[in-house]
Image 1: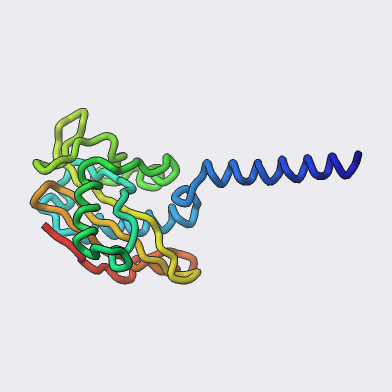
Image 2 (image 1 turned 30 degrees about the vertical axis):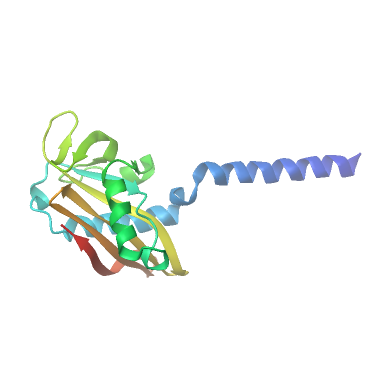
Length: 185
C-alpha cells in the first residue's frame, strides 16, 4: 500500500515538473530572458536603420531565424530564405516579464503584435507612426557563460539586418561582446 502511494506520488511529481517545463519552454527561463534583454538593448544602440532613436516605438520579436545556417544545407542562401519567412510574420511576442524590463524606455518598447511590418515599413497598428522591429532567435549555448544568438532589425524592405551576436556572462551580467553583420539591406 505504502509503495503504491509512493509510486503514484513520484509519477505525479514527474508529470508536474514536465508540465511546468513544457509550459515555460526554453525561451521563458530567467537566464534566456537576461540574454535576450542584453541583445535587444545592444540592438537599440547598434543598428543601421534610418530612424534610429527617432522611431516612435521599438517592437520586439522572437523569430524563426534561430539556428546557425553554417551547419545546414544551403548555408547563407537558407538564412536569407528563413529571414524572409521571419519578416513576413513568423514572429512571436516576448513574455510579459521581458516586456516589463523595458517599461518607461524612450522610444517606448512594444510587442511585435502591436505593429504592421512589411516591405514598405513598420507602423504602429493604433497610431500609424513609424517604428523599428528588433528580432532575437534561439539561444545557442557555447559554454556556461557564453552563447550565440541570431537576430537583427527590420525597418522595411530596404533597411534590415541579420546579425550573429556573441553574448557572455561577466560578473553576473550578460553583455554582447561581438556583433557580426551577416546580411544587410
